[in-house]
Image (cartoon, rainbow, N blue to C red; front, top):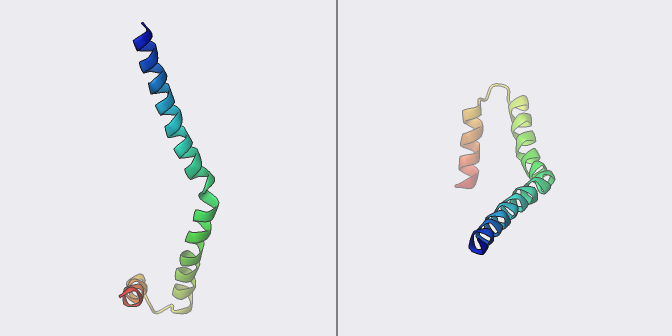
Length: 67
């Protein structure tokens, strides 16, 4: 009986630990949005200014910069 209780307590603790990982990820959403905001705005302005270019041209530009 005591062994089963200990197993259940361990299982409950593991579930609570997984919830904290999800909560930590959700708490860090604002910095993630800021990091994604810059490339998205660059891509949108690139495509707005260069109307004759396509998304493939933009990806090629990124490939050239990274390489």
